[in-house]
Length: 464
Image 1: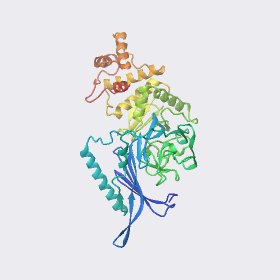
Image 2: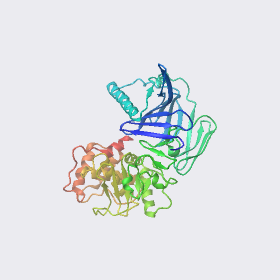
Image 3: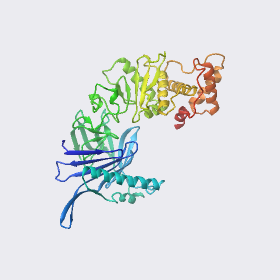
Image 4: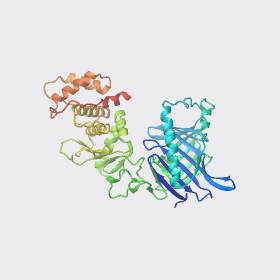
């Protein structure tokens, strides 16, 4: 029991149906949630109980007539209209009430697949209703109003700006004219403490910048839910095996004042959750601070940010450790966990070496992209990435590309600079691979590349 009432849950791979008997109202509310293949919520239907008299007998059913369509992180639609969201990197900074221009709303590149998914959704909905012992009807035209917004109908005057606290939780919401329309404060674990409004606008995204469902009071963190009243997750933390001393339902290692857990799968530095670009906690060792600052230097470059953000995805966890490498190399080492859910970067105590961390990080990026085998191609790409980061951050450290033997250094440097500048051709990369095999120790018996390996570093450079 909680202040929202009794909740019954039924889960399968595609849907979650929740029945909430609200204390505040005498009628019940049924909510239907639907997710995509990545576990992200795409659709929500809610509705109260309706009564129908059939041949003198009253029957009750849930009329699901209040939909929410999550088209993408940038656009959410409800019967009241649609809202566009604006981001600075991963932080939501503003929401604007839409005014039209949905010209491609009728676009359907794969109508056959649409029909398959539509029928499958109805089938799953019926199965879940049967298991819960409920009966629901869905209006077929509850989002038809969106067709009225294909053309620009009005100016988008209403824009609301989010002003977060140090955890990203919405603290103040202001209107376009700068006036405050909502003020929020939270208890340590996310329970509402202060919620003051000057208008009828209420922010959907509150604690830790996540949406709190009005039907349940749970915060939606992307494929899992958090109960701030009980201070626990409703499902097991996917990285709980890395913390055997903590409950698998624990939120933020029981430290919600300093830590955030956007999706449960994060970078870690010496056991502390690393938020890319974030401030290092105060009560940590100097070793941890050095690694944290080194990570932030890498994240401050365009290429470094691309790689770190890509590795900060759901279902994976990467750790940075100053411990000695398991297999004994003098520099650093990346060790994969072997099942594509992350790995550990060992720095051998060289915690401030930007090039070393960038090098091993790129090996993790290769592993994430199913190209983690030992080849000249992979090693050269990691060293090019590390050299690029070193140059951009003006950081000393272990030289990544210093050939030995009888070689013209000017020619080698010319080809390296061509690749780092992003103006190179396949001939430049081929020259570096051939030269690397001949003039770098320990790679005489290593293959140049394996089938299927692609130019990951070049892809990053050409993004910009």
